[in-house]
Length: 162
Image (cartoon, rainbow, N blue to C red):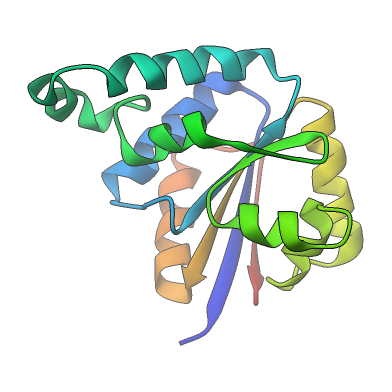
């Protein structure tokens, strides 16, 4: 089965949070989903604080909060974001971006068939305040994520063949 990459751009943090919640309902995990934001994103501090708060709750409360951003698997990834250049990255893209020359989204995205100029446009969008959700995996799973994310909807949504 062919591998695909989906990049969803959000310039509204409420829609971004909703998109994470939507993906969690589809049982998407941090092995399938990466999050990219600018290192200076002020909204990220709020998301991290919510994550840390829910990680310290009792297990019964965690179960109740499992469908929320901060209580879910993907929300927990926000607490473990890694700095890659001027961006904070969580998920499987971290290793690819950090291992690439210069550590950039450009180098990591090329592995998924994203052209250099398109990746450069995404980097510029992140520097301007957008947040990216990147889903990678087999074609069926990525198509499922695309359908789910269209309900939010993102500012832009593009699929690429790896």
